[in-house]
Amino acid sequence: MKILEVLTYYRPWVSGLTIYVERLSRALVRQGHEVTVLTSQYDPNLPRYEVIDGVKVVRVPVALRVSKGVIMPGIGPMAWKLARRTDVIHLHLPQFDAPGIAFRGRLLGKPVALTYHCDLQLPVGLFNRMVDRVVQVQNKLAGTLADAVVTYTRDYA
Image 1 (cartoon, rainbow, N blue to C red):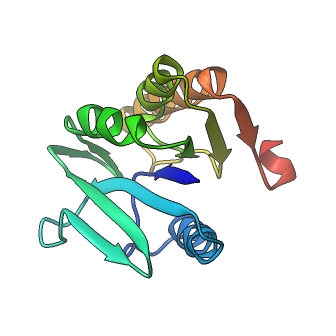
Image 2: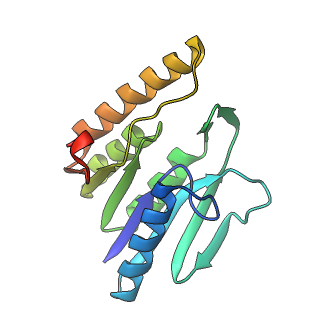
């Protein structure tokens, strides 16, 4: 099976979410699946394309940063290109771009699974509260467009 994993940050970035997706992707590759990770090129020194432990990694350049978040105008076209060649799309939230990618999956008739890892909580400040709310709305919209929503803690069930 060809699986497209989509998240804002991936290795070498270290967080619980990135480690989760890294371990999941490696395990799926060991079982014979073809896994592609679509993520941000949060550091311009990172390669746009590479293979790590059998996992294909595609990084989209970042145009703008909003606190911990990133704006990637190129993620939509790249998601479309990769989604056309995949069997299933797996989104990892929180992610601002998730509804657009879930919608592309719908248009292409590809199943979309969404794992809700946590809420976004930026540092104190009016602007950050507005960003939190926008991402919360985006996350809910992505959940509406997904075929399946997965949580692994009672906090988000």
